[in-house]
Amino acid sequence: MYCSSCGKNIPDGSVICPECGKSTVAQSYIGNSFNDSSVKDKIGNAANVMKRVPTRLIAKIALLAAIICFAFPFVSISCDASGYMNSFKDTDEDYSMKVTYKGYNFIFPSTIDEDNTELSSGFDKSNKADDDEDEDSGVESSSSKKSSGKNAKDEKTNGWLIAVVICCAVGCVVLFIKSQVWLPLVSAALSLAGIICLLIFKSNFVERYVEGDSKDSGISIENFLDIDYRYGFVLCMTFMIIGLVLCLITFLIDKFKDDDEYGYY
View (cartoon, rainbow, N blue to C red):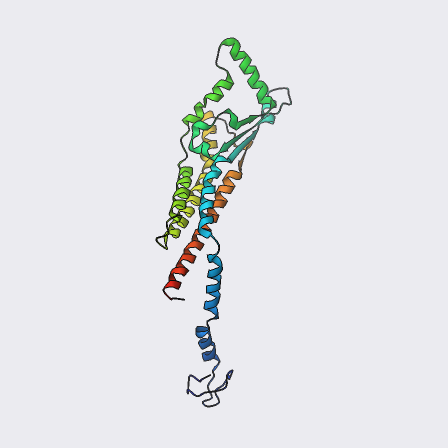
């Protein structure tokens, strides 16, 4: 090695230059850190390993899977009003119900019907008695009223979930374009936007679908409800996060390839 102060050839590993007496520790560390190629080799090896992982393909599948999750149960609302109902009646009937919505039900409210609702024995008996009374009086039965889906059709489409579907679909399509290195960043941004929209949907769900109904009826029912975000919602969020991460990795891999071709590494 050479002393940077006097330029003399000195033994390797010398802490003090025997010629000029100045320290060589700092200059040796700095010189080796910038000239050592091991760091570059490690970066190159890591990039080569990631090149063998089809991150772009997996990101496409993840974003498509997020859209498919809208066909699964998204949110369920359970209500147990047994204590409240039995306080007016001398019975011990189970007055509980569960309404399960799939993701597409919020986008197409007209698809919500009686199949989304599970009623307990107490409600079933009440409905049966009402149906028998309606048949005798010639009035439309409660089951036919339920199947008409009037309330569902009156409900507006949830724009936040439409935005989630659009973000996933466009983000997936962009990944098929390989002409520009920065395009995976666009898919990553769309994935992030979809995640934000899904979180907004969750944050205003109670205000839109629960409090609105209770205000219209004049009855506060929040204490009887249990809202559960089902596996459709969880999987949709998970796949979008996976898509976001893989889009960023795809960008870094493509960027490294581009820099490697121009001899930056």
